[in-house]
Image 1 (cartoon, helix red, strand yellow):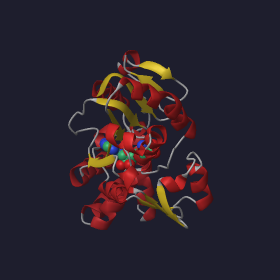
Image 2: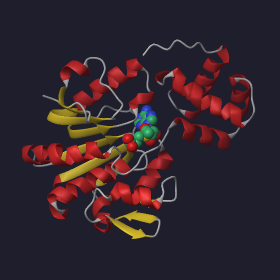
Image 3: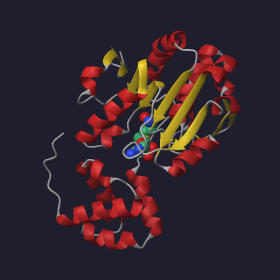
Length: 277
Ligand SMILES: C[S@@+](CC[C@H](N)C(=O)[O-])C[C@H]1O[C@@H](n2cnc3c(N)ncnc32)[C@H](O)[C@@H]1O
């Protein structure tokens, strides 16, 4: 996507500073995206320029944490875009179950783990606890350490941003939610059977080591914030990280760009599921 907006020189100063200070690779994110995040912080302090904000940020560790938190938007939910998970449950998992003795899954940009745990639940539902445990391993990665820590703990409170009735609606995908969660009022704790199928790791999609040998990759609602050039690179990274016959599941509002567009075959375009031939 070509970005037409021009930004003042101190915007670049702030971008460079944030990259150096927080290790957040601002070069690879869209300026429109960064601008929105920075402007919100300027407003919070009633500041007029990026330069003023940079001066404040340099020595303020609490603000550094806050900005990093804002930059890594963590919005997620269990079975986000239900039709996608329904399609995966009905079509992708049975196909991969037939093809493979062992199945390796990657949830890239997994936020606080709800995506990865949703996948684990689908497999247990399909294969039963014992088979799912011995057959499937799920690696979930993110650059937000606080999120990864929350994911490992696996305790979720419905009152945090999502009401209890919304939570129940989301989980109505499951015949028996109590099979997967210890539920106490607004507190949902992932059971060990589900937890044990997922390992959480710090991994930066931009600069981290290339991964290999996966049968399904979920990367949903992550690359949407990245520049077009980086999206092209990452889609090929995902292609190369998949075994032949493997599946790539992307976000509902995302579109394949670059070489990967010609390499992947659409398995179901509406649900954004692609296959490596
Ligand atoms: C909006 S959440 C999406 C979560 C989940 N995939 C979903 O669709 O519900 C985006 C996640 O991508 C992560 N992220 C952003 N930049 C990243 C990068 N360079 N490498 C890995 N993860 C990144 C953020 O920390 C955040 O947790």
